[in-house]
Length: 354
Image 1 (cartoon, rainbow, N blue to C red):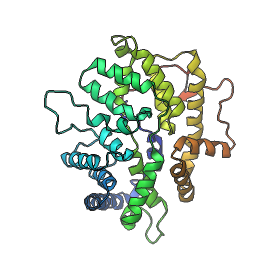
Image 2 (cartoon, rainbow, N blue to C red):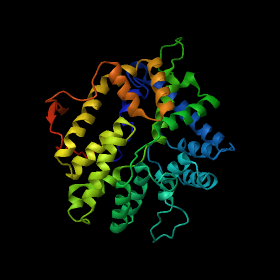
Image 3 (tube, one colour):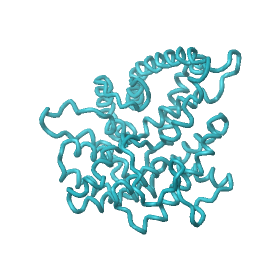
């Protein structure tokens, strides 16, 4: 699982629906180039802001596309500058921690966890803040340090990706620096009014990229095969972390990541069955709601406003499920289905290619 993201499903449902379909493909390609030019120009503009948060957000726009994982040296320098200028800004520190970069002050042959721990220094009680240290210690090959970080992460009581805060930040950026809507919406029929979706697509993409902590390393260190040769306490830590994500993540996909982690580690017990069924039920039932929302700008606007106001996607999703008359708990005997086949709650359906 390369990088399960807190709102991966939202990107698939909401990002530029139909933009590359049919005869309008050439217009869409032109639009993509115009949009990339805008993002590059906006990245430069934000570096002139007095706000370190603007610098950090602007560095994200230097990537070819949101959350691509690009490790541009220029982005590294900008993030470092922002992190030093705003040591207590949680969003800035999270972006600095989660960026796939190497701290330039580190010796070439020595471990360098400093930048990875930046978010955890300002938000130690948030499990999501410890994902970057897991990745850093794992890449350094320091099993003892990895186990220590996992144990610390397992002790946290919150898991908040702060996607609502990211939505607010990007709405503010695009309000101050409006995107070229004719270019963004070039795939639409000529003469039609700009849709509200044109800006919502940008907000959604960038907010998800900002609020996406890396989980690939967590899956590597918690896989059953790795647990067999690790310290005895690692399995217990991985089980606790999976439970934390299933219960406390503030995004639907984050909770599904917890389910996947529990299954991949083979650390689940009978006590986990109820929560796994609840999470997978809510995920399956919410997908049709998300698909319907992808074509309704007003509904999407309201959805994002609620996410922003309470800094929680999962609470909004659950509210929308209940509003649609769908219970939050599955009926007796219900099972998750994957590729048309039923899945037992603790079945290992972990797929490293996702």
